[in-house]
Length: 371
Image (cartoon, rainbow, N blue to C red):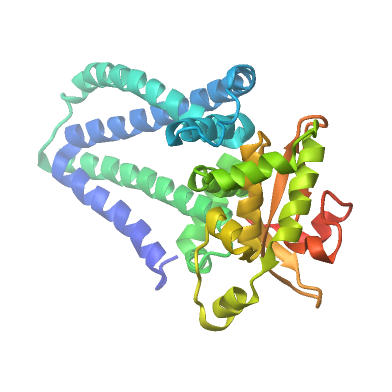
């Protein structure tokens, strides 16, 4: 069980330090410390369970309320604050795990606050009988050491559970293999953590973490809603004239796709500067519109900005695009929401001059979203 692995020695050190503290405190002080630890652990578990249940119950209600009361997307002349509010509200409306997490944190804060008051009252009452236990002498210190060792074991279990969750969420992380090489860690994980948690930590937590990471990626991609919110009049006027007389979201989205795909030329010099020398020139939609040149992210940002200026809900998507030679490279494209069908339609204005890439079958075969 004792090996050269640092994780093993940290776990043993946790128990040893608690044992030493128990001997110093004696039976009375150690018992109070153990009681405080157990009470805190129980209240934490109760708060987590209660918060998860309440958040799961409130989440669909909040989603329905946001759908009914949320305001429409701000126009091109809207303030930055209105765009921020819209982005936050629409993100909570559209991203279920983000909505659940926000509710969980709020509910958990309230529950922990209430349970904290209860814990203080219970601790004050519960520690009174423990004061009668001996604090000094060989008997008192021996009992204190035994209680301290038990407290250390509890702390070591908690630390092992955290490491177990880390290994489950990040199986390919640099420290994962090293952690699992610890004989003591493997023994505790096999004999205690797995039987106690079942599939919660090892199977369900990684799935939840991956799904939440994908939603954070979608939220991060919405930063362009804020960065590109302030548009020049020329871009807005072009978007309005391009979609004039069109009535459906699909017709407007298609018209803007045709305009961006034909009016903007691919900037091979900019792409080569980045590929060969690592030089990147950040370019906003105004610069792309003025120069009529850009790379995929510039096409996508300009399209999304023009679409939003005429009332369409569009977003920039980043990931990998098929390079035509059997591989994939970094790429960006768009998705636009069609209210008539209630779905997000993918489109790639960068590739428009090579064929029709507006909501075509097999789009996902050549475009892999990476969050």
